[in-house]
Length: 377
Image (cartoon, rainbow, N blue to C red; front, side, top):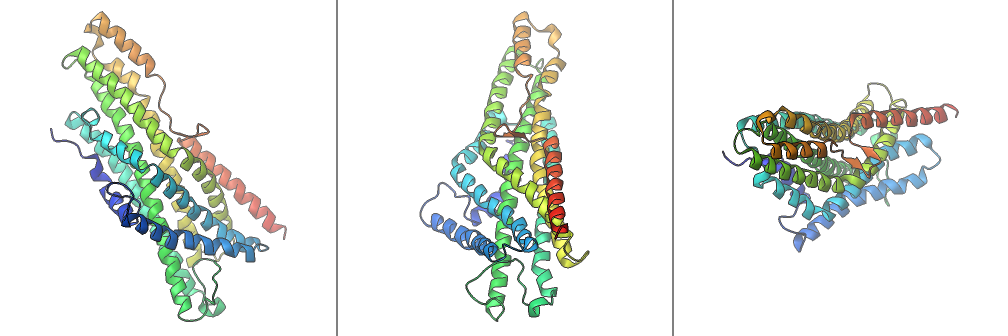
């Protein structure tokens, strides 16, 4: 059987990150470091600085501050993601190389079909997330042009600049700069998150392969097959641990930021004209954030569910005719596999659907607080 190409599913994402300066062919060196610094400094740090500086000038206006922070928080998260991606690039590439080893390859067409079905779900969520994110960018790019306040010279994002942004051509240049910057930030967000989700998909698929191998232990030399399954299980656990090490701090910061951002976005929706272009930009932005955190929680939850099936898969094999030694080893393996794999953020929050609902409830609490404070004025 031909070798299964795990990388083919994320090839486009890797190419996009390479263009953005975040995926070197080998290591960061020479011109590529300059390329990374230029892209990050110009379109990420520069954009964040001008938005953050503006908060000082509008600090007494709650509506204006929340109108900046709800975007600024999520954009700031990209800095954190970029840092961890660059720092752990060698480990990330090593994980992809592990997938190409013989042990992590599917053994038959049935296993390939199961993998492809899971990949199809990942692609569906990925496309929904992608369309929602860039739909938000499109609304951000359009609604200031339809706004007649300030002589029609409104920018997509509240920000401070050391020049007058209401005169031509500075207004047009700044306008384009903001749209290009937020598109850059969105592209980084989408592709990093999709790669992480793909790793979780690959991790969960390994448990599916292992379960199918366990169910068919009796097909061939039983003892050798069981030894291979035990080795495979150990390697999957190592793979999951490395994935979790990469995710730990990203998840912790992201859960907090997303809970706050969703709450502020809902508050902003109460301040704008219903069904206006700005309203739809906020609505799609909120949907994008919810899809983003849902993608993490859903696929993390899938890893836990699939890893929990291992003991049952081992029991389903035709173990009655096994030798006493093999039965003993099989029972020992089942006992060791009782504990499912749980991806977490420093063991404080687990990637489960329960955590997703907890984040939504927390977001509602932030919204209620802001709405209450605003109503008292």
